[in-house]
Amino acid sequence: MTSEAIYKLEKDKWTELHRGKDLTAITFAPNKIIVGTTDGYYAIDLYTGKEVMKKNNKLPVPNITDLLQVNSQLWFASDDGAFLKEPNRFRYFAGRRWLDQNDVIDIASNSKGDIYFLTPTGLNKVKYLTLTLADKAEKFQNDIRKYHMRFGWVNEFKYGKPGDLKTAVSVDHDNDGLWTSLYLGSQAFRYATTGEEIARRYVWESFESYERLLTVNPLKGFPSRTFERRGIIFNHDAWRHSQEKEWDWKGTTSTDEYIAYLFVASVIDEFVAETKEEKQRVADFIDAIMTHIIDNDYYFVDYDGKLRDGAGGIQIT
Image: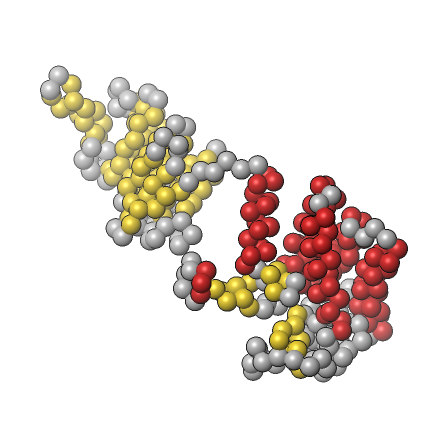
């Protein structure tokens, strides 16, 4: 292949099979050749060189640097990431999650179907793993327990150095309650499905954090957004000192947090709470918040008593 033509070797002689424009890469599929260009790709007949598939440049990146056919999969390299053709879409691989840099020079594969991407600075591997749903769920559950738990919350953490867990720091987020509700719901469904006592334990551990949202601040029935050890968060208007020594709490709770609490209460009541006392405990949590809303004309009213758009006072409609 040259930038203008594709040749074949027959009886020690090169003959032109196909003439094109701005050709950059070829790969072989059954009875055809896939041709990459600086503006998309097309296919030609393996024997006649005639075009059998029109050019497609509606791609994640039209400028193709390499092509690779692996069984029924067609992979593309570009100067801005790599991508895989699927029946109704392209799956795009780029950024630090997949590559050390996005300029992909070459692609290769091994007998297991794993894909290697060569860049100017390194070799990157995309490995195919065979997992059951239970295997995948266990991995996520273990990662959450190892890296994302803070006072019962599923929380965000930030890297000091990208990808280096030793430099990761756990941080609070406005949606600690919302993210935790999704995890807590998963454990409630896990317990309902498998009967594993560890899942039930995880549910009640995190629910204690929800209950504490109501007691860590002095406002009747108002749920804090989250809480933290005193002195960890500095110079932030949303944070207040708790009446409990050595603790701070965050206000400006919004309705999406409350929706998460309703979800949490419903799944715990249906799938986890097994005694009258446990069901009452869940009901008391929601009742306290709902009473606060009703008593304040269907508003959340924060520590300053003011209604602020998107923060301290949120109307429930």
